[in-house]
Image (cartoon, rainbow, N blue to C red):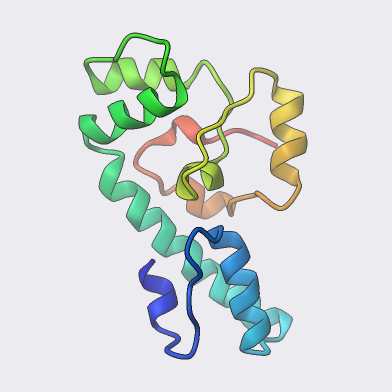
Length: 136
C-alpha cells in the first residue's frame, strides 16, 4: 500500500494485516498519541481512495460477491451486488485485508468490529460504495 512507502525505513511484511502494520509503524517511529491519530487519518484516507477505485466497477463488486458468497448466483449489476451485500454485516477492514467473512447477526458484527476494527466514521462516509456503513 502506497501509504507505507512514504516511510523508507519501514518494510511491510508479506501477508501482514494493514491495521497491524500501521501499529508496528507507529511504534517504530515513536509517534506520540497526537501524531499517531493524525497519521491514522492519513492512512485511512488512502484506504478509502483505494476502495473507491474498485467499488465503482461491476467486476470488482462481482469478485467481492463471489468471494463472500461462492454458493450464490453471480449478480449481473451493481444494484444486484449491493442488494446481496446488504443482506450481511461486513467489516470494511476485512475487505481491505482480503478476509472474506461476514456476519448474519448484528450483535456478532458489532462485537467483532469494536475489537479494534472500527473505521473512522467520517472517512467511511466518503466511500463511494456505502453498503458497508453500519451504525455501531
